[in-house]
Amino acid sequence: MNQRAPIVDIRNLDYAVNGRPVFAGLDIQIQRGKVTAVMGPSGTGKTTLLRLITGQVSADSGDIQVAGQDMRVLSRTELYVLRRRMGMLFQNGALLTDFSVFENVAFPLREHTDLTERLIRQLVLTKLQAVGLRGAAELMPAELSGGMSRRVALARAIVMDPELLIYDEPFVGLDPISLGVILRLIRRLNDTLGITSIVVSHDVQEISTVADQVFLLSGGKVVAGGTPQELKTNPTEIVKQFIGGLPDGPVPFHFPAADYFSELMSRSEDH
Amino acid sequence: MFAELWESFTDALEDLGSVIHFLFRLIVNTPPVLLRFSLISQQIFNSGALSLVIIMLSGLFVGMVLGLQGFQLLQRFGSEEALGTAATIGLVKELGPVVTALLFAGRAGTALASELGLMRATDQLSAMEMMAVDPIRRVVVPRFLGGVIAMPLLAAIFSVIGIYGAQLVGVQIMGVDSGSFWSQMRSAVGLTDVTEGIAKSLAFGVACSLIAVYQGYYATPTAEGVGRATTSTVVTSAVVILFLDYLITAAFL
Image (cartoon, rainbow over all chains, first blue to last red; front, top):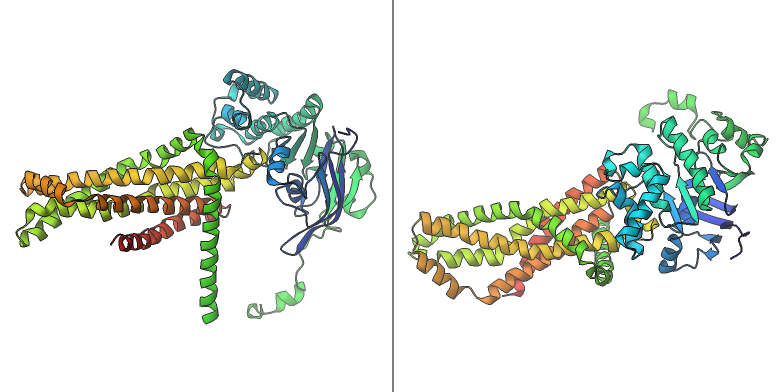
């Protein structure tokens, strides 16, 4: 397989939910071996993009290739084979609550391989060591803090040695220490395992420190792309608003509403 | 008015259709699950063994009430010895399967629905899909089969304990002759009576488990949605059990 070709290649993609377009003519290429951040205001379809890449939903029109596979013609079986080459970290970890930490990380191995118990144990402990939680192997998910569950979920996501690791909002609700840990892990796992990482987030400052490449989504399109440095100097209004965290701009502060004065003056029955 | 009625009628048909479609999905995915029997036996334990206490207690009391009521009624005709037959037929054909199924829906059905609903709400099912593990195969089918297998066993235990309860009241307290209690029962209760009971509890097992896993699997992923799924599991199960009970009774006439 061509190592230079992008691992995710989306061209002119349209996707709508209940007739409301989420993406219209989306183009995005994600390079192998890099940490790519996808940012954008809430509701711009960042998570939907992940669902498209992982084949949980399929596009209305346009091309989407992941690891050389055309997602639009993939059968269910082929999709499941492809997914073994991906790992995904869900927002809250999504650990299986009736299994211990060890069994959670061992779960993909037990489902997909016939490895001996000894080998499974070694693999699981190595991955837990990589996220610094080997000592928590016997704990249950309910006994973990938010940051710890996410690290366990990360260990589970890398246990099958994926080519592509996807993070859905990995920083939400974390304290600064846990956040720093996750940030460092994203970079370290990407480089030591030689994988590709896609991070969906709207934490501009945090993600800028680890990402090689940043895409900014808005209004169903990529409005800006480049290194974090390039984005900081991008003169477009929407980029300036997002990176600077300005309350008003192309993304309005006010949700669309009727005229303020006339609504205040009108009687409630008129609604 | 008519439009609304028509709409709710078509909605109900749509629901029924999607439940049956879901049942087919479960059946198609059953063979590979049978190869991993440990998954099923774990669920037989969860739905069956953990419901044992409530089933046994209820069976005992239902049997004791049957013993009392039956004795009073039969005494009017001077045929108290028929108490064994009456209680056994009532339990094996009717009360055993039906009461077990109602209790099962309340105890195990709600547990199944809320468990699956919470797994959906906390992304555990999506996480499995992302790990290339089919949640239907790994989570839903074992729970469904566990319920289907557990139900007839529970109903049998219910009936046995019920008969003991009837005997306890009828023979030990009210003084019906022990010999005629048992011998009349053995000569009057036939294999078809037992078959009818087993057929019923199998059908109830399929219905209750299917409703529970369907409601849980498709629950709206919020606290309210899971609550609603649990409630409608019990309500729907109860109505469906009684409806099926009538159909199967009629079929065995």
